[in-house]
Amino acid sequence: MGHQMFEYNAELADEVFDYCRDRLSMDPVPLDFGSLHAIAPGSLDGFIRPEGHDPDKILEFFKHSLAPAVVSIDSPGFLAFIPNAPTKSSLLFDMVVACSGLNGTSWLESSGVVLAENQALEYLADLAGMPVGSGGAFVSGGSLGNLSSLTVGRDVGLSKRPHLASHEVRFAISADAHSSIGKALHVLGIQPLEVETDDHRFTRESLEQALANDPRPDTIVGIVATSGTTNAGIVDDLEGLGSFAREHDLWFHVDGAYGGAALFSPTERHLLAGLRHADSFIVDPHKWLFAPLDCCALIYRDPTVARKVLAQQASYLDILHSEDDAHYEWNPSDFAIHLSRRARGLPFWYSLVTNGTTAYETAVQAAVDLAHRTEELINGMDHVEMVRPASLSVVLFRRKGWSADQYTAWSHQLLRDQIAFVTPTKWEGETIGRLAFLHPNTTEELVVRILDTMRD
Ligand SMILES: *Cc1c(COP(=O)(O)O)cnc(C)c1O
Image (cartoon, rainbow, N blue to C red):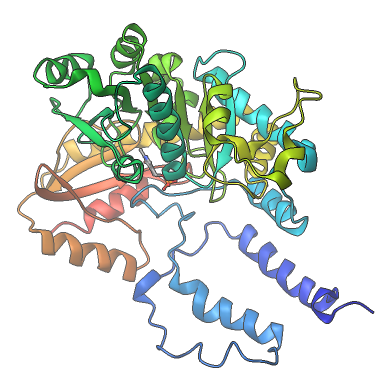
């Protein structure tokens, strides 16, 4: 007899699998309410106590009280922030990963995981035009991918500038870079050179101008470009910035957490051609590549330099770094600021392999096409207008005459009515409407319905 906690409970397994089966078969899933669904404070009182509770009852409590208090990020009506629309096969395989407790830390422990994850990373690197041999690991999200990349870029830059102290080096970024870039630089204890841009797009010209006016251009060790700003979907001048980085021996990092997925879009991928210059590149499969949270693909042009900076050394880990079989040996833990990790790349890999890349292309393209159809719809209506042209799958628009409070009240009402989850944003100081498309099942009818709720 083993410990009671490790006994298999067939009834509970059925209950849980039934719940998962129900949820997976819903088309669409209910939007649900997030913080609008009031749960009385104290309703969890007494849950944690010396003797356990009936697991059925707690599962019921989850179903009826906790789950509705989460807006379904995989609903086709979730158009706020950046949604997440995992394929059915990726969700099912996430269950396989969960039920197998699948570890993806090192080659020694997990070569089967690493091989499959690396196939997915190599496919993405190839689409990006990065050379054979590029690679890295799947990490929890773009924030950690950015921090890991900039740590490597900082150390590589410092090694070429031994006269500089580590806090003196800087990265050139634009004001529209994601907040996680600023946070990463803060963690590293270094400053950005924040470059002024025209119309929010970071270009080679804007960089050259900023450097010409900067007292210490010699302290710049790298450039951070964004391939698809989160707020507006704008793709920076990757070709110009990347070639500048090559010419000046600077680290070139491309943050494609959201818009890197446009590599799969036949009409938009040309915008990403300059990715071939990247020293490091991230894209979140948990955003527009239809994998479950939490999953970011982090890819280095030369993984050996990343390993030198980031691999953790400890006597109990020495066995992971034997030089035998060096050609294949690959420890995902060596390429980011992490060690233990679940096999979070496998649901994406399984989905990509089983659905095929053509299905990925049509699904990504559907969101781009809907953004452009939405632009036409808005141009044909009197009460709303575009703020700027649709970019990738983001639409920024204005309800003429509305104040910030009116947008907020409208957003809550849309959710209360279970029509959609749409949140306002700010553009050049003004509160405006924003639609971020991603789920291929979001329909034009839904968009019309949303826009109609903004009429008087
Ligand atoms: C979402 C996003 C991030 C942060 O990614 P997380 O996975 O949320 O940590 C970074 N950069 C861009 C451009 C993003 O859209």
